[in-house]
Length: 176
Image (cartoon, rainbow, N blue to C red; front, side):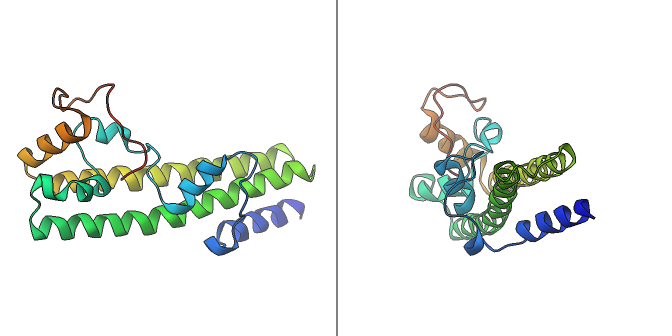
């Protein structure tokens, strides 16, 4: 019975809207991490794509004039950005909820291995989904650009000597 109640409590917390989520971070998250999750920020989750020449919509929009985006490309980037924001914020709020629940279990000293495993697995599953949202946006954005625009983007973001293979001078971390 206790196990069912804990699962029900976790499911309820995960489904809470962002407004009902904690305003102070759970013990497992810093204030910056919680803010990034709640705001749908990239937080470097798509760095593998970014550093290999697959730009995200946020930075493409920031460089729209330098990339000479067409109206269609701009609309595509804006739509991708809106999609990422909606999905990432929803998932981020759910992650914060799971992490808050995990912290509360430990704080109340009402914790056992089974419940910890459940919360940890749910957090990991949600983190994986969040990362996929950001990586998919980079894939989709790359498809909307010409090869020349992608090369120009990479040079603008990572320096003129940067190959499409990326390298240490990149500064990706907060975008999509």
